[in-house]
Length: 112
Image (cartoon, rainbow, N blue to C red; front, side, top):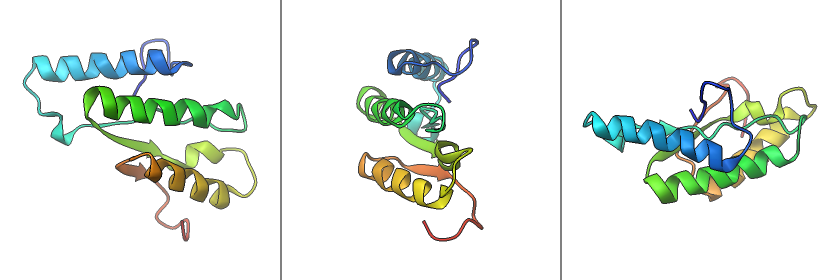
C-alpha cells in the first residue's frame, strides 16, 4: 500500500515515493518483485471526485516506474454512496483498461 507514517498521501508523487521506498527495501533484501502487488490507494469519490484520477495516475506510474503488479480495494471508491455496484463496475472497467492486476472485492457482491 502506498501509505506512510502520515497516512494516505494526497498526491500521486507522494504515493509514488511511498511505493519507491517499498520497492527499494525489498530490492535491498533480495526479495523478488514478482510476488509484490502495490495498491495506489483509491479513496471514495464521495469525498472528492479527483480521488479516482489520483488512483489512475498512481496505477499507471507504479507500473511504468517499478514494473510492479497493482491492485485495488475496489469498494473503497463507492464508500458512502448509492449505486455502489454500478460505481464499482465502472471503476473496475477503467482500472482494468489501465492494467490493474488484482482487486479486493466482495465475492457476494454480484456481477461486476
